[in-house]
Length: 191
Image 1: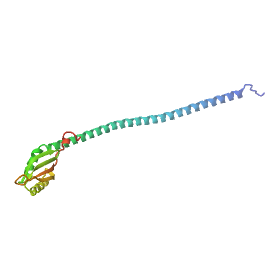
Image 2: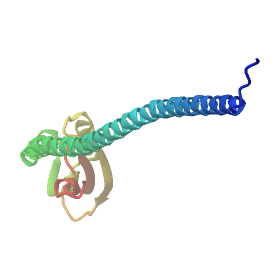
Image 3: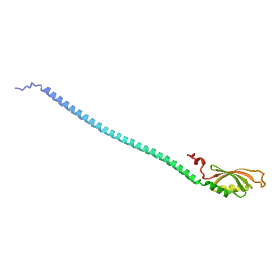
Image 4: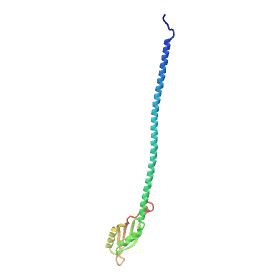
């Protein structure tokens, strides 16, 4: 006699196939989630590493900016010190200028020229005096031009008063002192 199976085997096989299908589907979902998670972690680690590098560079740039600002401050201080040193050198050079100027004037004033008034205004000397002849004044101007201390002699006026029996001419002359610090610079106005 033939054997008849009355149990619902088809439904049981279909149910097992569905269970197998769902377990494979679950396994594949877990694997794909794990792969996506690992890929996102990998790229997140890359992003975090780049952020850390960027932050490091930003910090180093701030440090370098601070150093640049310090260098600029030091350069300004250096300029100020160099300017002060130059001023001190000029003041040192012009320290004995009064005696040097008087000594130089004694050398350049020829006989026949008499200085009656000597006035210093900044780097300029104003001379007033009397002269026996214009040739003596011309000689004096040539001596001033060849002088290492005095320069730019300019004869402002020559007048003859006629009161004197020797017929002396009155003259006014201006000249500059070379290498002398201006009074405004020496008093601190040049900074």
